[in-house]
Structures are given as structure tokens and as C-alpha cells.
Image (cartoon, rainbow, N blue to C red):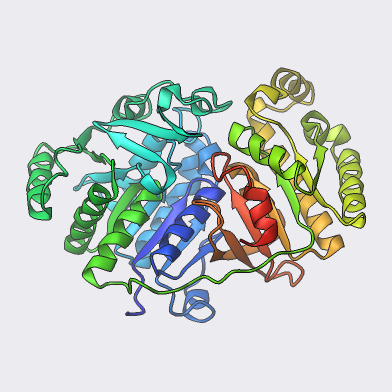
Length: 456
């Protein structure tokens, strides 16, 4: 194995960035995730020998103008890093709209940064996560059923980016004028040479993006081989997609000997007596996990979102929640703070009215809530000296880790696909070397919180 970097990435939300890190680590690729672009000196000294690195972002919650300010410098940095593949990682459920987290805007910025002579590969499916793309239409597993995206019980009712279109080409057409070609499941059949020839014919039509269908691991690896071949020919390749990109590339790298197939990067961590958990997710998946946790040793503390984000009350109410959590820890239990129990429990209309009275736009809610939950986590974990904690919710995870002053993460062990247990790197000794699990709303099965506490 060489010491050369294979890949760099920017993730549009925090839990998405740990999802990629886990996929790479499972593939034997040592990866470090940073909260801001790392210096060349840091990469060459403290993290010498890594094969990939990522930058955790929050562009999924940004307007197009905010994305331009955020992604322009990041893409320039990643291009200068010289990695063969640069990946803009978006959620495997394609969370986006013309106004928030626009994937179309990310594609336009990527073409501007990396050159528009070649189309951008777009790969969203990830069978390991229960995500599939078939003839351009996207599907996601929910419970024991695979749903078309526009009929998914959570994504079709997402409070910020509800998905009302499963055909990803049509969904993108609302966000950008870039043209999209399709490498469907039939084009990916057969041997690699045949698929490469079909891709060549598709590229002759000059699409600006190429969407790859993903139905199974075989076609996923074939897509990875095609993307890597293009990267090898061009020297650098900008790709948009879910962690399916990493699963695809790692499968190809293992088969061709670029990485070692059986490198063990994990070891079991074992249980901790107490775990602090905080959830900013409204997913029914997280709702079930909270219910399971409360029946298995956790003590629930419901959070009144309005009181926590409206400036006049926020600090005093956060202090009240902090004391409640510390009291639970003092009793020997594990506190679990949650802002919602599923999508039906959202405090939406009342909150919008309160935000308007305080002079804030409704879009500020996620940021204000995330910042307050971050401060609360810092105060509770720091005061109690806990070694391990858990954050549920993609945007929430990003705000919490930034509030803690964490600058880097490595994958310690898998807990559930997309939600590993991580090791923190921080300048503040109080949060350096902590163990934390960060999960998106759709990640994990019912016993996820318990598995994190028990380190299994």
C-alpha cells in the first residue's frame, strides 16, 4: 500500500461526512474528517500516511448564495490538494430544493472550479444503506419496505426539503439547467469493457452530468471502475453523490490491488456506564430509537424548541436543561434530550410565529437550535467528564461538533451503516480523544442508542 492520497471530499451535512469516513474505513482506507480545510503541515505531520480526508460542511442547510460563498473556496482547496477524486457528498435520500441545499447549484460550482469540459458523475444509490436508483428513479428503505422517494414516509414529508419527485433528473431540473445523461441498469450490465463502451457513447451526447443507476453491489462496483478510469485519465475527477461513491470505489480498489482487502481498522470499544445523548431529529427512525432507549436505561428530557431558540429565553432555559441532565447523570442514568418524537411532533407553526416576533426568519431555526444544543452538550459533557456521547440529526451534529471545538474525527468502530463511533481530535484537551457517535435521522435500527452506550 502506498502513502498517496486517493480521495478527498466535502460533505453537505455532518453525519453525511462520517458516513463517507466509515465507508472508506470499512474498505481499508484510513481517513480523517476535518471540520475545516486542514493545512498541508497538519496532513504531513499529525496525519501522515492517511489515504483520504474529508471536510464536514453544512451546505445542505444553505441558500444558493450561501453555498457559493462556502463552496467556492472549498472546491479550490480540494482541487489544489491533487487527489485523483474530489467528492461532493450529498445525502443518499437526495435532500435538496432550489432554495435549500441545491445539488444543482453544487454541480454548477463544481464545473466552474474543476472545468466544464467533462461531465460530472452523479451516483446516489448505496445498497448497504438501502438506497437504490433504477432507470433514474430513486428508492429508499424505510423499516422493512423499500419506498419510491416521493412516497417515502419520512422524505415525502421532510420539514425543509420534502421530496415530491423520485426521478432524480426531473428533481435536478428544478435546481439547474445542466443536462443529465443516464447510465441505467441495462447499460451497466455485462463486463467492464462493454459498460465502458456504453458510457463512451453516452458521453458523445455531451451531457453535463451523468447519473449512474445503482441496484446491486455488482453494478455499483462497475460504476466505481468507470469513475476511477476517468479520474486516472484526467488526473482529477469531481464527483457528486452519496457514500455509494466510496463503496463503489473501494470495491474497485480492492479488486485491482490499490488497497489491501483485509485491513482491520476497528476494534470493539466496550461499554461505558453512562452516555449523554441529544437528538435534533424528527425522523420516525429516530423516534423508534428514542423509545427503545427510554425502555432500556435512558432517561428522557423533552426539549421545548421555542424556549431554546427564542433569544429572550434561550440562555435561562438551556441552564434548566443542563441541570436536569446533570441530575440524571448524578442518579447514575444516561440522559437523552430530544426536540421531537417523529414528524408529527414538530413544533412548527408556533415556532415560526415566535421566531417572527423575535425578528428571525424561520430558516434560522435550525442554526439557532443547533448552536444551543452544541452549547448544552459542551456544558454537560465538560462538567460531567464523560468519555462518550451521541448526537442524532445531520444538521444538529454539525453545529454541536463545531461548538465543542473539535477539528477532526476518525472512525473507531461501526455501530450501524452511516453512524459509526468516532474518535475526536480537538485543540481543547477537554474534548480531545472523546468518543462520539453522530447519526442522521434515517440511520440505524431501534437499538442504536443502546449499542453506542454498550460499544457493540
